[in-house]
Image 1: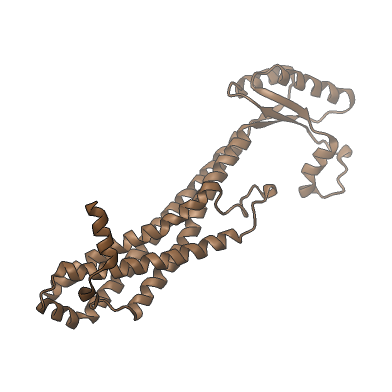
Image 2: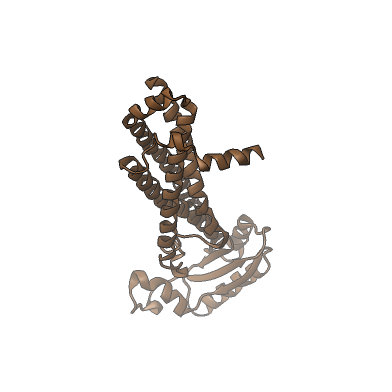
Length: 302
């Protein structure tokens, strides 16, 4: 209850002490513009952190649920026998949900980006690919490789481990970069607001001396500065956050064909509530920075 009354008193302010804080001027504009611009950037940094987290999770799940079996090139009955033997081994392997040999058209579609559309597939020693879908954690890749080596010589199993690990690591580093950007933005905001508060205190040194003569305490004067700059930072950050969320909303929607890497930067579901914390954090940063700057500057002016 007492904390609530203090919060209400903080918002209401002290009219006498508020005279020491200029309601307009370059410090007011600097605080509003800085907090708004930093909040706008913070929205994108937060979107980057959340989007890369989703990307890492999706890539890891998709690659972990599939594998590819590559059979050596063969012709005629030898190729059919080889595919049948591989499918038989896969059907008997625990953890394998489905195995399907790719058709010639599917092989051609895979090679087309590198070799062109008019690919004479029949004239090239192209290996036969078998798409494998995994449905259990009991899949033993090493055991399957050993059995394939005995029953289907030359077959190569790719469980996508070499692909999955670097992609997940890269996405994890991008997420860490997003959180680091948020910390840097918060630090820059605090530094700019500190400079603005010190400039306002220095510009109003004469008013502060008069307030002291009439009995105003330093903590009362400092509270007036803290209140004014905290509210400015909060409102500026709210405007910047709103602008950032609108900009994110106007981005292209996620494209499944690209894996969402270029078009998946944004928020999903309850993630849209995360940017609403930014104005609160900006106001808290302004509160701490202005309070420290005001008390330090008032001590030097006494």
